[in-house]
Length: 81
Image (cartoon, rainbow, N blue to C red; front, top):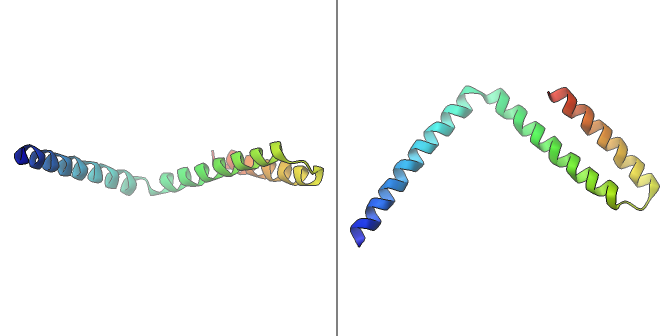
């Protein structure tokens, strides 16, 4: 039983090492695209949060401010393409 557990542990370590190497290759090959993807993901999350705030806003001035923020985020997302 211990032998089976040990071999699974070794197999897991080998798979982890292969995964780490693949990740290193991806990040070292495309640091600019990785940063661009992170920025875009951040903008998309912010956009979703602003949309949620617009939907739940009861104050018209706050809603207008959030709509302007949404327009700015949409502009930044269009530029990141």
